[in-house]
Amino acid sequence: MGELSRVYLSVHTPRYCTYEAAFAGKLAHPDFRAVRDGLVAQGRDVSDARPDVIVINSCHLITTFPTVVDGTPRHRGVLTAQEAPELIHGVAYDFPGDWELGSALIERGRAGGLQCVLADDIHYPLDYGTVMPLVCYLDRSQSIPVVPISVCLAADLRESFAWGRIIADAVVAGGRRAAFVASGSVSHKLVRGPEKWPSPADQELDRRFARMLADGEYEKLWAWLPEYAEAAEPEMGGRHLAMMLGALLGAQRKFAATVHAYGPSSGSGNYVISLAAR
Image 1 (tube, rainbow, N blue to C red):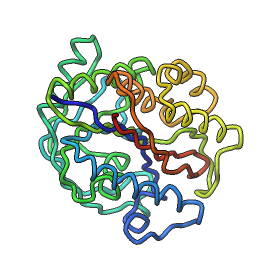
Image 2 (cartoon, helix red, strand yellow):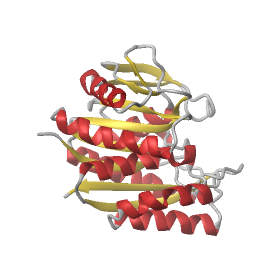
Image 3 (cartoon, rainbow, N blue to C red):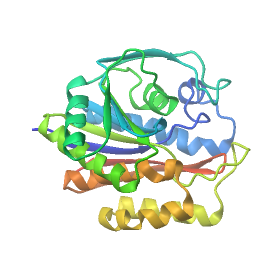
Image 4 (cartoon, rainbow, N blue to C red):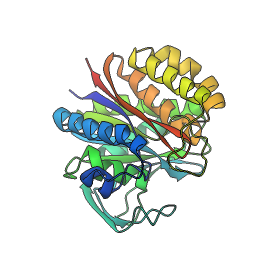
């Protein structure tokens, strides 16, 4: 019997997700320490959980009209981040995929009337929001199968939420002990200056989001998400947060939360939170 055993809100910003930061602990500013150390702790949680597969929704795997699920059996390549080549360059990655689960997600998405496409192509490029959290923190051995799923610009919060429910249903039907990763920031009003924090008002909104998530108030948080998204402007409009909440509610169980850290990156707020099924 499959289950969604873990849900993670994680971070991919280049100030945290480089080999220098992850493995050597070299950080550009002291305020980055808490999130970096929180990511290390989150990686330990993944190792302890031993999921059969990780489904990851990165705010930098962006599609316009269809949601793309990457079912490529083997993800192999060398990554240089387009927007930060001075920080992330020449990073080799090589980890397994899960074509069967990817195909099942597409089948369920189409059955629900959602526009979606299966990628099964060794040349399909992965983004740094997918690759770097995995290779730096969440699965340094690159041994856990991974199914990336895009954020879709034409999809609203409700459609993103529906994909989360589809993920929860598909892993159960497929007999997978799965983890879902929402890879992205909370408030996301970017400014130049990597050490810059969100405004006090946006930090309070982020903390309210995290409190509700940690307290298991998933229905209330889902109802509040549009208001939060309008006020705090989370990354990609909060689509990754909607998918995460869809997965949590689709699992139809409570999760024990560990709030590892909160920190800045160029005016954005970044939470590291692990949720374990009870």
